[in-house]
Amino acid sequence: MFNNENLFSQALMIQNPLFVKEVIFDKEEGELHIYIDFKKGAKFRCSICGTEELAVHDTHPTTWRHLNFFQYKTYIHYRNPRSICPEHGVHLVEAPWGAPGAGFTLLFEAMIMQLAMSMPVTSIAELVGEHDTKIWRIIQRHVSVAHVIDDYTELRSVGIDETASKRGHKYVTLFVDMDESKVIHVAEGKGSDTIEEFKNELPYHNCNPQQIEEVSADMSPAFKKGIKDNFPWANLTFDKFHVIKLMNEAVDEVRRSEQKLVPGLKSTRYLWLYNPDKLNHKQFEKIESLKKLNIKTARAYQIKLALQEIYSTAADEIDAMNMLNKWYNWAVRSRLDPVKKFAQTLKTNWTGVINYFDSRITNAVLEGINSKVQTVRTRARGFRNINNFITMIYLVAGKLTYNFQHFFKRCKDYSEASI
Image 1 (cartoon, one colour):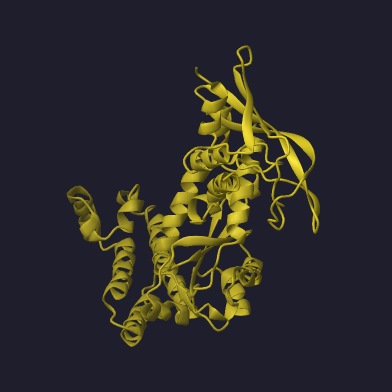
Image 2 (cartoon, rainbow, N blue to C red):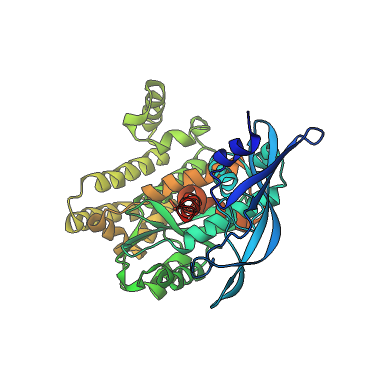
């Protein structure tokens, strides 16, 4: 004879002394309710110290939302026992499928965490029929626990960057393990205090701040101050992509001031961002025709290409220093104010720029992570709650380990206790 209780006992990995007492399907509400109990005289272990064979003091009726049974919401109801431990007193016995206060089984929460990697929380909430605040609580709890136990013992090289939670809105600063390509800390804001916050957090993850040897960042005055104040012993490398970005901005500033006199420069902003070998035939011809006009923008473009060539060909720090000195003298004599201003910026940050040719650290890893973060931001159409944004950054880019395996360990423990 078909037995619903036995079927669900096996499906939920219910072991002696627990058993499925009753299964009720509420057709009107479209819900499945599974009632679980324990055998009379059953003994349990202490949830604090693990002492076995403890008597039941009383019970606490508890309900968990479980994975859907087909399209129907499923709930587990359990007369959760409380054991009497000689050392720790009365405590709830852990159920194998979830914590008493969670409201959801671990399998349900594992599904939520998986969906959150690729779906907006509002869409997940609609899919499972729960309010999005409950979904956020699940994600935040698991991310928080996983991040707290994350170990940075081997951390040596750190990249720092900033990103916005929504266009024109609050910023957060990302700290990335450059060797492991993962976010290890997210701080609200983008000031120098974010770096102090990061330093203070390191000991909680088995990391002595003194072991940080390399730091990569942009030339933000706040970042420079924060690094100097908190990691003065570390080699600071200014990201080469940020250097080239500033050079590109100088070229564009020259173009914008000149296009009033040279109409052909209009709508050519992006042409000057690329190297000649990255242009298609039509784009290449356009730039070549403009060069023949002996315009300032073309001169600024050549200075930019020369800077990029140094990054590509310099063999070491000494070689780079000689090449950059020649480049600097050319740039400051160019009579192009934006280029001269950029050259002075480079000179002011000379050590950090030169350090690249020794460390070879770039923020390419950080750019890749930032791309993931922006995808999440775009998918959610921005985050009004900065804490939710930080949680999602850890989720998609933190490479955290979520301990859902203890669900199966609990089931195994119950099984062994019944033998």
